[in-house]
Length: 280
Length: 284
Image 1 (cartoon, chains in turn yellow, purple):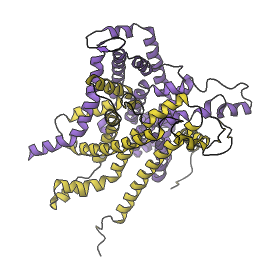
Image 2 (cartoon, each protein chain N blue to C red):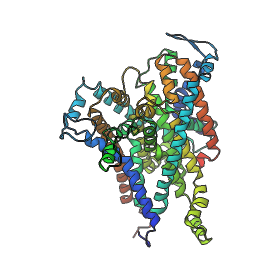
Image 3 (cartoon, rainbow over the protein chains, first blue to last red):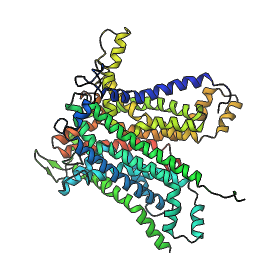
Image 4 (spheres, rainbow over the protein chains, first blue to last red):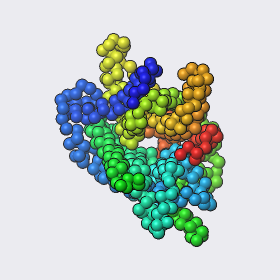
């Protein structure tokens, strides 16, 4: 791809970019390394040997509160948020292709949902449940609170996707006698699959890592970020880093799954792609 | 048939609209209503008082806290804008292969999908008294005493903001830059513009929508933040949301609600000003 010589500006900017990437990843890499501290090691370097002591420590219930429980709740909540985000955003994206009364109200609500500070939504839902005499819980109030954060992202992504979607595919399907549902099931969804995976990635990871919106909405049982926040104030051992390594690992696995499945979908499409113009 | 189609459309948008109704509109309305309530040490009492607002606005602590939050916001906004613009500029105009562009863009975005709290904690072994930074500076003899201001200070708060939120600038600005017709840049060069002139008079104006969207994200997040201030300042700095949380922990819900309403108005006002620069629906 190289055309001609690089200007000095390129190398300057490339160096800046490299520093930025180091800035982004450096601290995370540091705590991953430090989480393998030996049993007598502290929160900073040097390493006092290498062990998985702090990971074992993490799973002992009495040491650090309820790690396993909060971890499970966060995973379940993340998956539920992901499913609802994908379905509701996709379906709203379909609706927004035609003008309907109130469409701009819904659109501005989505924007408002993004810009209203998370803590206000958390506080509002917490107060609402209190006023109504309901108990807040991670599967009810916190679930709703997380959706107010993931749905706007989902909707905006679906807007961008449908703006680039060629409606002639649908018309062709309809001309061939497909019902509306068949058109969506066999034409629209397969074409948009990579973007839907992307929306799912947003849905899961944003919920899994959400702190402020869970604060006044999750009731008696903590989600994982709340548990981590609690630990930051009263845990002074590398077990904190072990926890960081584990949650970051989970996030990376989810991101990798999303990327790999997107690539697989694309590959498959290239392989099974149109045979138009290839007839002998 | 048309009537059926209209119903289908409403059904399709209903799940999304209902979530916003029940978990955004009604809760915010609740905050507004409760902000006028009375309270004592054990309960909140329905009423219509302006007392919560009066107490809040007459307290110098409130004004100091708001000023502190605005200061964090402006400083963070300026730094993330400069860094974000530079990174986006490099990706959009200096990386020539589309594959590399995608890969490097992903490298920048992946941290967004990981835990913010963990990313904040990650600075501890770097910036602490015995952290990597101090050790390195001591070893090369630049300083004799460990620097205290690196961690648990306003410096570390802003550093964490920049670390967490520069991405919100990079993505929309990069998006704006990728839409710039490359022949415009050639035209500028042909007309005798220097590199800097092209950057300032062609690229920057065309990136305004991206800059506006990025700014809206960064400004609203920092204005409503409390986790970063709490963790990175070690409890030494204040923010509006922290102040609100203190009221909450004292069960002074109406006081917290009044503060929430003022913060909300401030955020909406700021965003409305920035929205004048951009039509978001055109940017997708």
